[in-house]
Each structure stands twice: as structure tokens, then as C-alpha cells.
Amino acid sequence: MTKVHKSAATGYQSAADRYQRGRPDYSPKILNWLREELGIERNSTVLDLGAGTGKFTKRLVEICDNVIAVEPVAEMRGQLAKVLPNVKTFEGTSTQIPLDDASVDFVICAQSFHWFSTPETMTELHRVLKPNGRLGLVWNVRNEKLDWVSALTKIVTPYEGDAPRYYKGDWKTVFPCDGFGELQEASFAHEQVGDPEDVIMNRFMSVSFIAAQDKETRASIRKQIDELITSHLALKRKREISFPYVTECFWCGKI
Image (cartoon, rainbow, N blue to C red; front, side):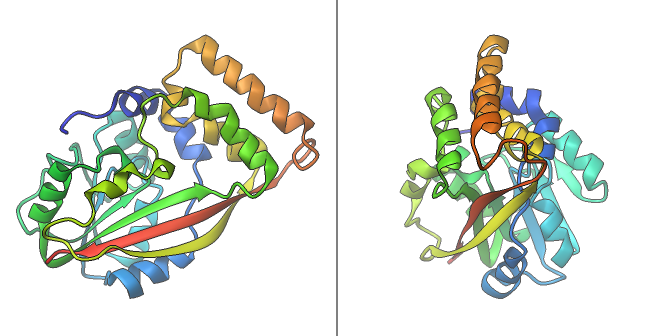
């Protein structure tokens, strides 16, 4: 799987700026998980694969001095370079990582592994990891216990087509995987606080398969989301809201 999925390539090309503004940060608890559970140290070499605009890369550089970002979409790399100009950033895919064999201690895939969860990817990850290196997988998942969050999901889901999604669970089919140990799991509650335009509108309009739709379809989706924001008791006339997430984390070691 050397090609980028059409929804990701098209959607992220056109919505990289909106992605940077609207996507949530990660729970501060993720730093403890990265250090204590995964084992990242200040002098580790960490690859952020599918780094996007650098949302998670920012967390990695807080605890590690040698972070490398690989991202296939030029517009996303451009946003990352603006935010983190000192991070080494390369074009590449999950099956064509531009790094030497056994060159990194950790590979992190934040909000990305569902796009490229194939045996070929696992072979490439095994190649670049050092002996006893570790793979970490992270997703921010909407907490749909609130009715307005589930209503937003109902608006966008009909447009997802064949785009890979975390919730479908297809990414797990590569595990257990030869050359890697058992998959470990942890999760943390998290909230994104901000203006509804960023926290809701920019967040959902930057979803790959939404951003990849034609102009008229995007306008229709935007209208539906706006109607929800302006009519729901928990959202209307609010200048600041809290959008609930659960940060789901997984890791396994190279053996």
C-alpha cells in the first residue's frame, strides 16, 4: 500500500489549514503514557508517521530531542513546518519510510494508523525500528454519550464511503503480527475547549472524506452542522464549549 487513500490525499490537501485550527490537542496524560508506558526518553529517536500538521509531534518534542516526522501530503507538511520548523520532516508513506534499517527507537502513529494498517506497513515498521523498539498508536475518539456529539456523527457518517475509520476496527486485523509482541491498551478522557466554529465546524469540515466532497455537498454539510449549533440547547449562543473525547492508546514491542 504505497498510495495515499483518495479521501486523505484530496481532503487533506484542501483542508490542511482548517485541520490545524479545528483538530483537538491530546490529553496531557499522554506525556506520562509516552514516558512511563511506552518508554520514550529525552535521547530517544522517535518517528511520527503520518504526522499531519504536527498536532501530536508537538507533544513528542516536549519529551524528546530527536523527533522525525514523515507525512505524504505536502500541504500537511507545510503546516507542520510552520509550527515546528526545527523538526526534521520528510515526504514518505507507511511502506516507503525514508529512513535506514534499525534507525529509530519508537514509531508513533497518531490519528493515522487506520489509513495504512496492512501487513506491508508492519514489515516496514519492523525494518526501521531498532531491536526492542516499540510501536505506539494513538487516536482521539469522540465521546458520543452526549446527544449533540452523536448527532454530529450522524450528519457526517453517510459521506464516509470506503474511507478507513478507527471505529470500524479494521486496523486491528494486522494484530497479532509476526515480529511484534502483544498489543497493550490505555485510554484517557479529554476535552477540547473553544469557540464552536473551531471545536465543531472546523473540526468536522476538516474530516478527510468531508473535505474531499464537492463544493455543494460541503455547503450542505456545513448548513446541517450550523443548524445543530444554533438550535441545540447545549450549543446555541455559546461562545465557548467543551467537546468530549477519549484518547485511545496502544503499543507493542518489536521482538
